[in-house]
Length: 340
Ligand code: PHE
Image (cartoon, rainbow, N blue to C red; front, side, top):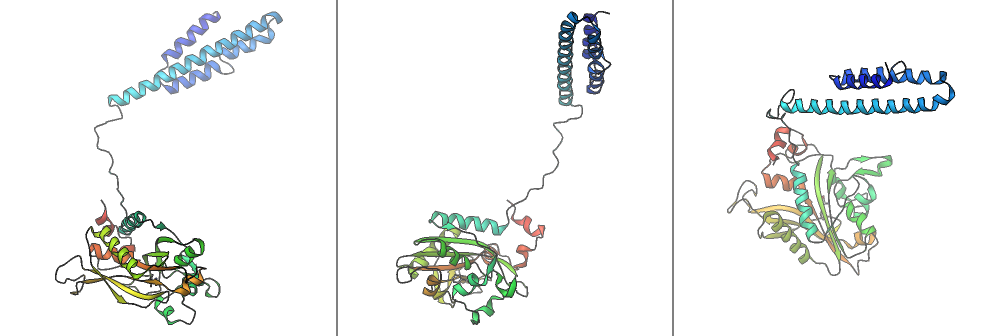
């Protein structure tokens, strides 16, 4: 058989290959050592020298022709497979898709995002800080020395060597870290997790969320604090809400307050406000001069206010959740109620 007929036969067999496996066998047969191409290559050394060049070129052409034929058939077969799938063999576009489990954002994440939005719109920086904190930032620099009674109420998890490290008991250490780095005037909030060595019950949890706020500027007063809190409440509840201040003691603010907001759930007393029409919202106050000083800011030139918003508390209040342990309990039956 001449070479032309050999090639034509091979092309015909390629065209008839019924699937990819048959085609793969054929490829091995035609291009392999003992196949059509192999035979031609083997003959070359025994040819008279002037014929070797043309014979080499012919072998190359044969290889190119066979390879092109194999590739073209492979593409045809793949296309046919797809077409068959589309025809309904192995693929039914009308079958319902497997159910997808949809996740959702945790209510704390949602509240945090909303607050971050409100504070960003007022020009606040959003900061983060370490959850494992130095005693200095969590206490000392906040005017809470080692022998201060306020330490007792913070139920601290001490860790690390000689108790120099603590799991932060509040987000206030971020105030100090920020004041060290930033040049006044500035405003910031810092949402995050805090930890206390609590006996857990419906209102106490070892891990919960707070959002610290700090504003430092010239002549900052309690008026600015109250105004900001009212803007915050308008942002959350979409209406004007009255607030009131009661004295509160925190070593890092002077004066210190507890800020209450008018109950948004009732007109004449309810379970949430315990009949008082006021809801305890957050502790706050003007930054103590010693705290400014500890962070390298001159208190004769600058003043500021700070507040510590309990995010877990806010979520509980706004959804009527009566047990704080639900929040981080990881029970999907609880969490699924917030999916939307
Ligand atoms: N860091 C305080 C706490 O968690 C709350 C607070 C923050 C009070 C800022 C006043 C000002 O106990």
